[in-house]
Amino acid sequence: PNFQPWGSRWKRRTRRKQQRSLFVAADGSMARWDDLYRILDRAGPMAGPNFQPGEDTKEMLHGMIRILVVGAGGLGCELLKDLTLSGFLNIDVIDMDTIEVTNLNRQFLFRQSDVGSSKSETAARFVNKRVKGANITPHFCKIQEKDADFYKQFQIMVLGLDSLEARRWINDMVCSLMEFEDDGSISPGSNIPMVDGGTEGLAGHVNVMYPGVTPCFECILPLFPPQVNFPMCTLADIPRTPAHCVEWAKQIEWDRARPFGAEAELDCDDSKHLQWLYETSLKRANAHGIEGVTLKFTQGVAKRIIPAIASTNAIVAAACATECLKLATGCSPHMQVDSGGHYMMYQGAEGVFTSTMAHERKDDCAVCSRVSVKIEIAREATFAQLIEALKTDERLRLKDPSLSMPSAESKSGMRTIYNPNVKSIREATLANLDVSIGSWIAESGVELTVDDPVMATQKQVAIHFLEAMES
Image 1 (cartoon, rainbow, N blue to C red):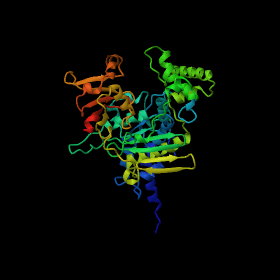
Image 2: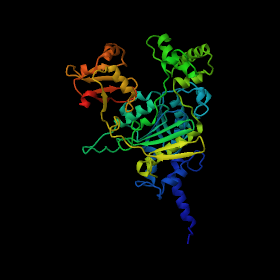
Image 3: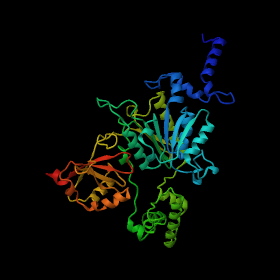
Image 4: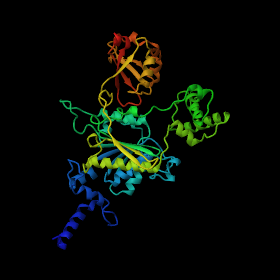
């Protein structure tokens, strides 16, 4: 009953070869995507509800889906490899860093001869040469240098970042791209999904975020503890560890010495600045009998670099690429609240443990819900105290905010209270920090506009005086 004439089988094989001819290897061997097509050519019990097997899905995967990979480091190299070998051929990668010798033990797209070159450009060149049909476009710059029109081009974004600040900025940018219909629903295609991967030693996570649907990164920010800061008296007087010496050079001695000119700000990505930090920290350590200050250690403390392990990067990147394939094709439901969770945690320190969970979206999130943040403060408090409150508030955790307020006297309709980012404006508004808030704001409910380096867009802060609330 199962006999099939040889002619029929030959015809089917010929048809499959014709369909795959575009991606057949140069030596005439089986197509690179043969195993992938076993999934995309047929439906199954694990397929998503909107999955449509066949040529249209494969064509969309190879030619229409455009992905942005943010970061070309340890996780980024793995992501570029996994995504291209999963059939994504149109990929952009953005990274501001250059290759260092210490990267070579795990960032396998780089070689000794690449040291000093751009990570994004080198990685793109390697993958384009290795994978037939791949079109990797590099961007050697900061993510902040690209505008909203650039980020609108992509259907999926994958984050391979090592800092909270960069994650918060890109999360804010993507959430700001959301558009809404007249009935309040999200316009289709305007909420670009993000797949955030992160590693820390033998631990990692994968978080699938749909702006306006799942919690954004800002919603779950309280899960990430604030960075450890050392008491200034310890740094200045009695350093006890190598980290104290590096932080002393970074926070105190740089401002006093200004080794590269009065206007030069410390840039831990500048090799000359980093070398100065190392030499200054080493002198401090030697003076107090402290060992362990090396160039690599100085870089880790100054840039708050988390140790990376190649196997953890590989595991997390593979999970990220799998989620991207699910999002793009629907061949299987991606991680989401309804299916058990959008957040996968990995622990490899003792055995192997993974768990998937769901977080709650915050209705008062300033980023994805676009609501103003209510700040309760005394009328007699100064604007300097308000800025400190904005830095420590768990809902904001701002870095160096600038403030402005509505003003009928100004042509623009706004009055700058303080702006630390432009020298001339900073000097003109510095005295305002000692002004009491109540002398400029008559009653509760006034909304101030806040700009900060960790945010891509402006945020609104509603001032509520404590005595008004008590009454």
